[in-house]
Amino acid sequence: MAFELPDLPYPYDALEPHIDAETMRIHHDLHHGAYVTNANAALEGTDLADASVESVLTNLDSLPEDKRAAVRNNAGGHANHSLFWQIMAPDGGGEPGGALRSAIEDTFGSFEELRTAVNDGGVKRFGSGWTWLVWDGTGLSVYSTPNQDSPILQSDVPLLGIDVWEHAYYLKYQNKRPAYLEAWWNVVNWPEVERRFAEAHN
Ligand code: MN
Figure (cartoon, rainbow, N blue to C red):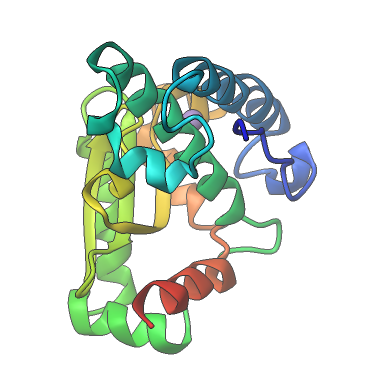
């Protein structure tokens, strides 16, 4: 079955004032919508036309060479944005708890150090991309990726990712990417990130 654009799990204005309604509408309906349309077009008629997005991203080599870039970008965009809407919430923010918090403290020293590392990855990403907290199979890791490259490409499990494409923040923050990254933590949905961590490492 072809990919479908998932509904936003909250209204467009639910993340105000940190992320404005117009940005959310354009980002979800138009940008994510285009990734879905373009991924489906690129996969049509291939062996992966009915595969899950995870399976598509870990089997790019099985596609005809002339399809790989379009699928990497657009199926990657679909996977990244599907995660992004879920790991934000109107009543978000605060700090992580439970097993995830312990793992963060073991790996990075403190939650504050994790946040600094994630923001740093986003600020230093030249051009468009994402900054991630992932489960790499043995532990937590922070890195950034260019374009719509998903951690799934290297078989990592994305737990939290911040979109640093200009389309994610430009209407409200213009060129101030660091201010957007700072504000983003007010909408992080820790229960969902903790759930993804439990699912990944158990
Ligand atoms: Mn985006």
